[in-house]
Amino acid sequence: MHIDLNSDLGESLGAWTMGDDAAMLSIVSSANVACGFHAGDAAGILKTLRAAAERGVAVGAHVAYPDLAGFGRRNMDVASADLQADVVYQIGALQGLAKVAGTRVRYVKPHGALYNTIAHDRRQAGDVIAAIRAIDPTLVLVALAGAPLVAWAREAGLTVVAEAFADRAYTPEGTLVSRREPGSVLHDPDAVAARMLRLAQEGVVEAIDGSTVRVQADSICVHGDSPGAVAMARQVRAVLEHAGVAVQAFAA
Image 1: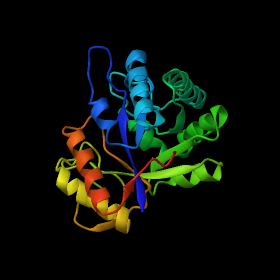
Image 2: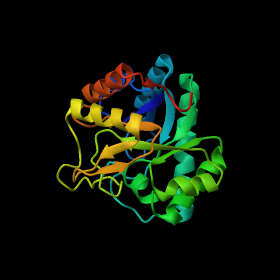
Image 3: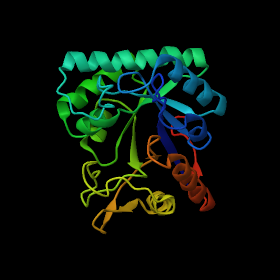
Image 4: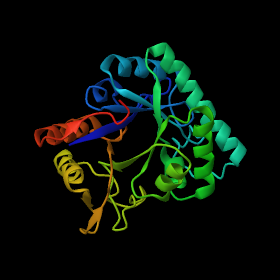
């Protein structure tokens, strides 16, 4: 039994530091690296890519809406031509930096509002799928477990990995609780690790109302910008491995 553990990295920007990439790269098996649209600058992204290459961590393009001020978490109604070009641009930029760093981009994971929108919005989902197919159809798409996007992307010929979120609460319907709602982000490393072990072993998580919801996922995300993210990721990995669940990249 095995599962991937991923985190959003490369998000520091100039004098603004976000997360602890070096520490997270010693824990996770996959790194979703910012591409400059929601966070990250070229030098910082390259540094993160080099560190990922040194540790053998798989690299993915963390593409987003062009929203530095809102950290990519504001909804945007982007025209299809613009959205497709934006996604191609971001992937291409990261591919160039990755080559210099001695690694390569193996998958794409949309960020924030873009991630949430394309999970259910067929038009924008189609734009992201088309962009990936245009630049490199072998790239894996990481998508929210249970979302319509999973089937749409597979129908279009992409390989899709469904993911769950270690530090986010779930609704009884299997969707993420909005960050605007109380209790949407979880902070107890022990509780989060226990939840993710149950996910890996049984394919279920406890929803915010106490009910049990089925979530079939091959990757677990711990947000790199969350308070205590490193301790949480370390505990999740430790609990999984102690129970015999290997942590390994899906895009090895």
